[in-house]
Length: 155
Image (spheres, rainbow, N blue to C red):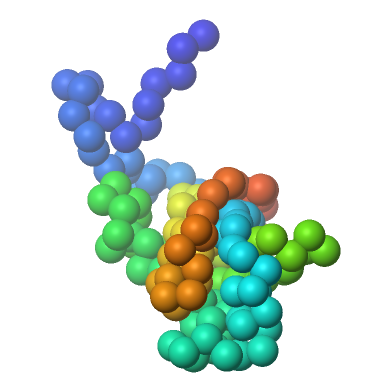
């Protein structure tokens, strides 16, 4: 069975999916990614000694802001009034990376996974931007959707 791409019309042109007939559902998506850094850079971040300021606080705000503006950044995404966005960071025992997790929630006719993925991406890019003067070998990667759920809204 071949699945039809939902963002391509009958002529093969890119188009926005019409979700107007879909029911409103409570939806949540979680995405994760990482940025690999030198241990020295992680120590600077933890000590709040990066010249540009508090790296993780700034990256958290950037991720939340990006989730809220995803429809402006990704051409065929629906602009969504998200009800919650969260970005968290974890430094594993290996101390060679920062793992970024973002979640987004909404009650809507379409999913919210692009918002969670965009939040992770923007947070990683913000860490990169703030640390590029001290770490020339940072690598962003492994950005992926971890989960997405939906449930009917009672009514």
